[in-house]
Image 1 (cartoon, helix red, strand yellow):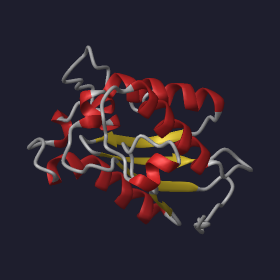
Image 2: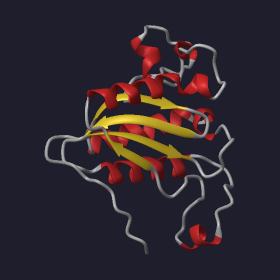
Image 3: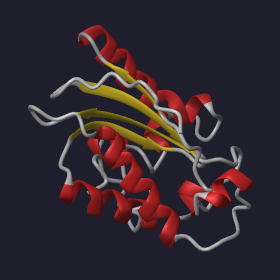
Length: 169
């Protein structure tokens, strides 16, 4: 098994991108309640400060600050992905290697993280999260995307029954 090198800085702030295997699907937004529950349960066990999060149909962007002395983000994402996968019905047609490891094939195995080194990088990451639904043609104005922490901060929850909360807790 390959061992991936990740920069683990205790207490650092990171920007993440986590994708489903089958890009172009609406898996995450179609099952947003399951994703929120997986997120909520995981962060009860492994708290983190979430500065921004946007859930798009097939990927997530998040900015988290690890607790002082911790760098546990791989375990958080592993649990979120596993809990969501177990809660969603469907045949995601895993590859033979994923079948051998009893994976459902819903998520890409890896995720991308970047340690934010200064305020300028933090601001760029926040803007990226905010504008990503517009970039993907999902809405014309970022405030109209209901699955974004910015929606709640702006006081404009497009779908109150969905409760698109900032840290999705």
